[in-house]
Length: 102
Image (cartoon, rainbow, N blue to C red):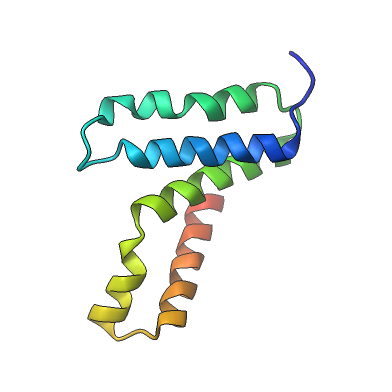
């Protein structure tokens, strides 16, 4: 085990991993590469001894992936359900936080 990476670089690789994971989701071909998209996150977490930083990196991964794959939800809340745009954004942020932090 080497020295712990800087927290900013850990969050960067978590966000990169979340973006890569979002890029291989259907309808794009490449769903078999979803496991490869996790490699940057797992490599970054391997040398992180602090559990809270590791949890924050996982939350960052989840939030970026959700924002990239479910960006249509706020628009659907506004168009189909008559939500105000700020209310739809607030609901989406709450759902993203719920998914990210379990």
